[in-house]
Image (cartoon, rainbow, N blue to C red; front, side, top):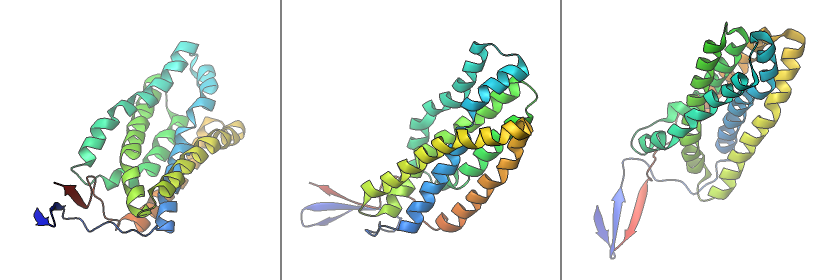
Amino acid sequence: MREDNGRAMIESDSPPRSSRFETGRVATVAAGHAVHDTYTAFLAPLLPVFIEKLGLTITGAGFLTVFIQAPSLVQPAIGRLADRLNLRALVLWAPALSAVFMSLLGVAPGYAWIALLLTLAGLNSAGLHAVAPIMAGHVSGSKLGRGMSFWMVGGELGRTLGPIIVVSVVAPLSLKGLLWLMPAGLAVSLLLNIQLKQVPYQGRGHVEWILQ
């Protein structure tokens, strides 16, 4: 900390945040959000299929949504870690992990396996949604509102396309057809690694001015 004209400046080890709106990188983060949310949106249209395949009650099927949603409760803890650690990997690999977990639902042998896959998908989703806005904000520069709008549009687009895609695949190919959807998420994670791996990451800010 050093004094400068009556103000204290706290410097971190991270490079200062640019004021430039990096359209390509903002769009890449939003695309990762879209693809991730596309996969997690598979569950609702699959519930009738699981009911028929496994002989589930309505209650049993309803609890499947709990397994994927309940992990969101750990987001504050992940956010706390993100203030101290570089959790960029949670963003870069989120589409790949959601693709793996949600696609494997097509070959899951029973209720317990489905519940486990959904829980893992939920934890992965919690990590993405706690950490990715930090990266989106960084590459948005001084235009944070515009960057967050890209981020939100990506998520809404994914939740819109997910049910359409999964029904289009499962109807002709059965549940095992979900495996054909896995490579897209893997490819998007590779793209995120190429485009965003060099993006500086800092949860608590880069250079903060504190009025005294």
